[in-house]
Length: 288
Image 1 (cartoon, helix red, strand yellow):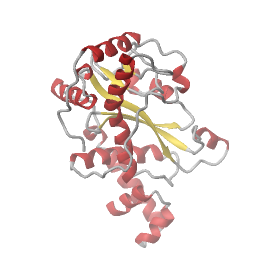
Image 2: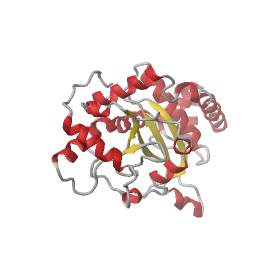
Image 3: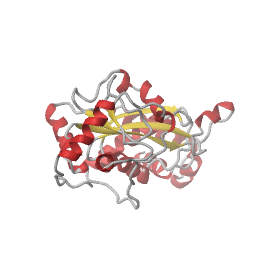
């Protein structure tokens, strides 16, 4: 059963193909995938959770400062981004809602990870046509203000608003034409720290979620199971080497969030000043 489940996730093929590979009826493959998926999702909160103690939060913050190579990021509690998971387009007029800006059908996975690339919060289920900032506004992370603790912030890319209130505080890069050494250094350090979420998505997709040939209503459960398996693999030291490293995202497409991003101006002014004032520090850990 585990072999059928993992093969289906890793290959992204249909139940018919998996049934031929394992020599069993397609209905049996369907039942196995659904059953094991539900068993994995049942342990979600044991594997994916926000830091439970101040000590765990301090370790994550020191890790982000090491990634950024700057003490100004000692209050970074996580990195957030959205990821499009390719799916089989639903039939009928509703299928167009799932086509993202790259014109393939998908479902959005919003995730926050720590400095080691482990997911600490996930929210999945919105169709691919929905912008990341709208997904965030409807997520429990935003509505319940569960993370980060006061005085900390979360690193994002240019697709989100730079928010200070309401929580969570989000730090985005300087947009459009970057002028001044301070702003350029800020974007550079911020990108080094935030790229951990890109690596997390890339690592998970290298093993799972190449495509999903399952019903779109079941896709969120499968994606959640894959995020759990991702954390489990990292904890066991089972990882792969990615061919391409994520690049600097300072000049990303601003999209919906690029209209008026001023509510986080206090953070946006304070951090670049600290980056310019403080000396750089070498990373204090190795990233796998």
